[in-house]
Amino acid sequence: MLYLRKKNQLPGNSNPGSPNWPARFKKLAAEAKDARLQNFYAAGVVDGDTPISQVPLVAMDFETTGLDPESNGIVSIGLVPMDLNRIRCSGAQHWILKPREELSTESIVIHGITHSEVARAPDIMRILDELLIALTGKVVVVHHRGIERPFLNNELKARIGEGCEFPVIDTMELEARIHRSRPRGLVNRLLGRHPISIRLAESRARYNLPFYSPHHALTDALASAELLQAQIATRFSPDTPIKDLWR
Image 1 (tube, helix red, strand yellow):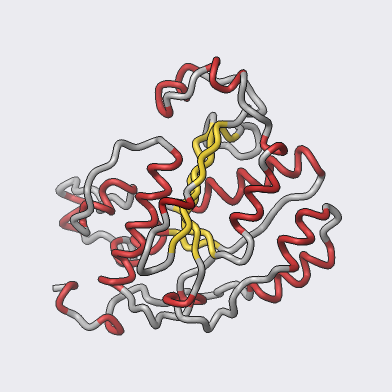
Image 2: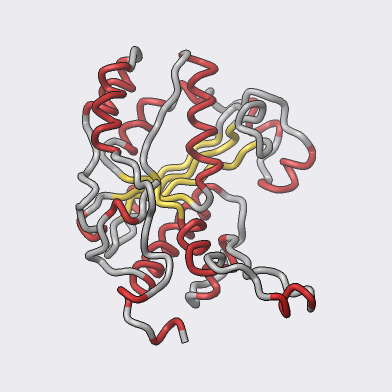
């Protein structure tokens, strides 16, 4: 059984084509025109060989008006600073924001943020300094990197003409390495068995983590933080170099 193997024998503990984020940040610092982004990149990021146990982390989650970062906008952001041993809830931050487009009925049903709340909410540029300070020098923990990084990138491009890049550990992708690394067998396909879910709630349940109501940015950030701690303790090791995990 998978849980009885040694950690260095677990499938999926590799990260082909791992980005060289320190070199990327140096290049971006030289190219950035906005002073806030210059400072963010100039602060740098840990070397790829740094063990995950020594890496400063921040879990982040966005609620959005839809799934397309080109046309949809950010409604709320939740941040929770953390490391492998501790989740610092006292340092958590949560913002409701005015998105670039009108809220739809569908999005209100999902995240529960209403027209009246966004009407009095700030634009993301009002909280950008705080946001970048919270991310500076950290590796960001998300569940599905197709949301947070491209949405923030496009929000800034629309406002200041340049986007934002940063390294992420994607807890969904770590689950996919384990549960989606092998194709489904013919028997499973014939019987109509679906692949194991790697959504946040189902992934947490596999580690006996408690259920949290979804679609609140701060709660989902906390849920992702706890999930990463469980993944490292069960599937990887505190000595795993960050380059094996980040994207």
